[in-house]
Length: 350
Image 1: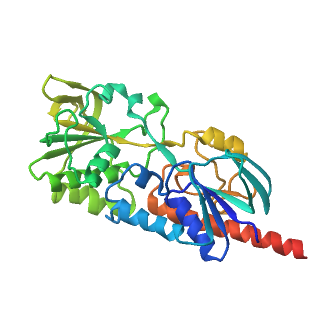
Image 2: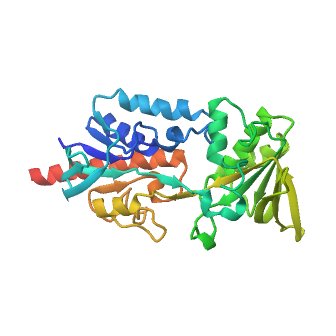
Image 3: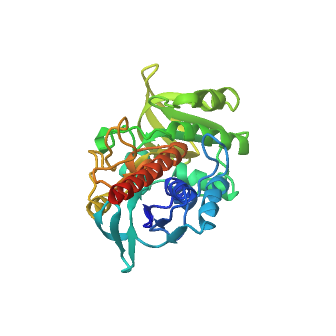
């Protein structure tokens, strides 16, 4: 059991896996292509997390500090794995800089890529500066600068949030639901209303999927307490009348066309597979599912396994996932990796 567990990706799942491995007294090695740990919540400047309402910088920052201060965790930043060979208990990972890491097992916590709204041009992103994404609004909120229209810096009076941008859209090859966007959008809408109490915030939706226990504190509270308005609609396009943005489409409840002016339009962008997944698949010899995420077998009999023995996976690398569930999956994957290593040691001793 002397060889460490290699963890590829230093976001919430990777940090959770590393802490779980180290807590068992075993060594972990994190390899991350970014220049700092924390993954999307830190690198993209998320604001308050769902459902804890903690600031991402505090919650995920605490996870980073816990790993940074652990003598059993080595961290390689600005690094990627160029090759990975061997078998369970005896792997060798070679980094692009030529460094070699011997590992007993590997856990892929490589996360996702935010959908790029330029792939949905009819909804105005890239054409009108005041069409932004949920990530950009999160950055405005977390920076303390306030929500402002990029075109002229004014506080928006009317804000539209368009759900399912890059999700549930066969026309652009995204058939999956990104799971968390409805809840995140309701949360952002409430934060906008709190910071700009005179503003009007509308959420355009096909269906609302505030799954589990989140419907009350997000869907209903956003309406009843924060007066966020919901419009069930199919959006055709986002244009401009020269003064304001126009969201055009069909109100699917009353079956009539609508065109409503706004100062700011927000795309609730979904989760795409990590842009590096083809390379990750080739390097680690693991299969991807039909959507491009890392494939894993049935969860009923397998814990975080991939198609390659000794290589495990957790979090949004396998598909759209919440931070909380990514953390839990990473702990399970760490347990599975350690159990595999213990079993291999016992077999060798027999």
